Length: 310
Image 1 (tube, rainbow, N blue to C red):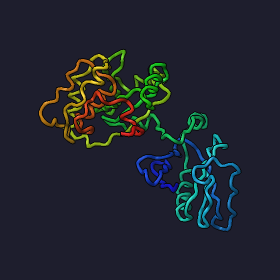
Image 2: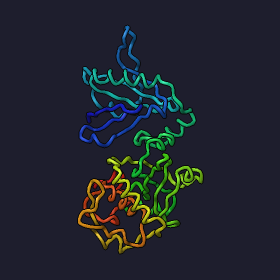
Image 3: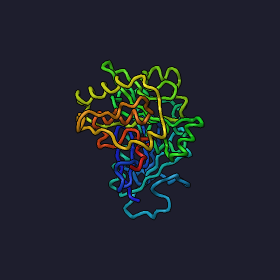
Image 4: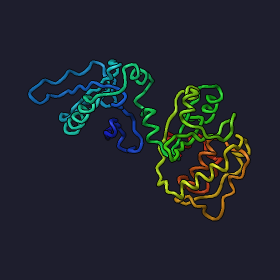
């Protein structure tokens, strides 16, 4: 199917034209070194490079080439057997390849061992990666952190829900630019810990991977104050996930885009316990991000993933 390409922040993203909101793949030139091979005659009469015998391609396999089409290949230096092939109209491909050539030629900070860790992951191009330093710099209060656990309960939950993730938390950022994780866990209930402490204790190694989802809203003083007030009111509450919560209350208070309660004060947060996605939803409702009267207890970790169909 025809694709749309976007170069942004040293990343090549490609999309189906009917789904411009969800990339099919992401090649990050700041994390992985690539070789660029163009299959057309270059300026100065230089011959075109030969096509690879068995390209691992998304765009060229079993697709007849148009007469005006151009094809280029990207090979990860650390894994030269992996090849990404792209084909499209001549003017579009030549312009895209010229821009990629500048990224490929730029110096990189990552080492080959680090690149091998990235490229060795199955379908690594399906998910964008982020450096920890970039995450800490870019994080804002209200961003979502999703977890895919390794233990049996996490696997059982994903099997039951058909979801990619089994736990969710929110990122919070202090005035001093320190990043914190707000979550509800079975062991400690509702707690907030610093990112550095979380990494220092190696708790991230309990998960197959974690994913950050940027949440876009104004973050006005009113929204952030509403969020902080709610967080302060629930810190220390025990964890609780019961059948009564899941099948009982289906609606709760609604909030405006500015985070103001609609129709009077919201009493939905009066329950003595919270589970992880209920906490995340309650926080984002109070920021005006999740609007409507759907109860916070009706959200699962997968509800915050871009792969969620709702």
